[in-house]
Length: 151
Image (cartoon, rainbow, N blue to C red; front, top):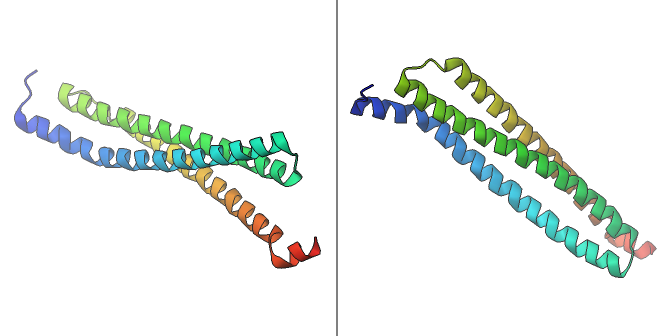
């Protein structure tokens, strides 16, 4: 097998689009990891407070934080699976083109699986955002002047 310079250029062209997708998935992973880190930090603060003094509000907030962390973990898992599938697509494109092997069905299947994983990732992220927003509204409602005056 003798690869020509133009063949290598063609293989690189095939891999460019999935590489941009991989960059987007990496950015998504950074967002998810940052959200998880903030959830973990807040969880540690509340757990320390609960160790000193029990409070139903802190306990309720902890329950919400645990739920959010599970959703973010699922999203991270799916984003990682998507990244893996994109890497497989790139590898199969290079292998198929350089070895003249027909991997079209495998490339398509890996790409579809990656997109399904990315859709799932976004779905879990959106669900986590809804829960976080609902928690903020609930916290704001508890701190409104009318509710503070009632206490």
